[in-house]
Image 1 (tube, rainbow, N blue to C red):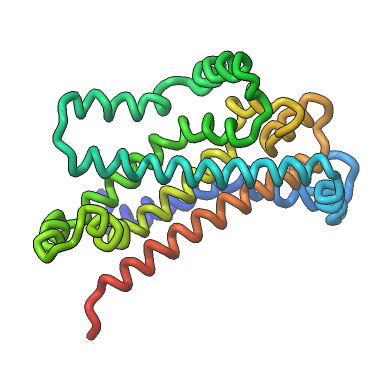
Image 2: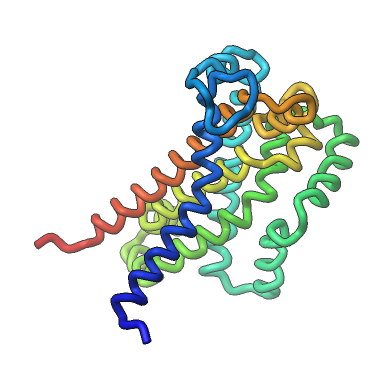
Length: 268
């Protein structure tokens, strides 16, 4: 029988192997994006930044980045605001059909995005909203809300209700309690929810394909349309940018969580 040391070593090796398997495609795409060849090849015979120059020098790609950032930012604001109110009601409120309402709010996670996209498209076409960026952000908010709701419910459960009652006893209004007690204590969770809702919108493809049109083509839609015509190393450069944006957002979230944990530790 293997001893504890061997089992621990085997477990670490297995974890390293799994992590390498998950990271290998990302590393390959990142290296291929610096290829100096005229086609995708790994390993590349020469290194160059010309595909990044071509990507950033194309006005269509730049406009797609701007559209994605604007829609993602608006989605983040809308979903975080609405999700915070919904999460607070779910955590603190007592009302009929609470579980049913909670299940309905989480439905977009279960329903395939293509069904949601088709339904929203028919509504958008009748109202003449196809290609309108604020409306696309509203549609993205539908699929981002469950993520926000889960994160903020977890964050609000860590806020002691006794602190809210104490503030009201000392004369603070309900709005004052919400603004001065609840929101500051749940702020790390709010920031995490905002980041993840932004990433949900930034990476959303299916709904964007139906709603973007030619006026508001987002980055994932632009990638999709480019892949339909030709697979070129520019796609690898764009994919590397998407990976970088996701990594930065996750790093910011991890940093905020670490700072929150450090702030909560007593000084020695």
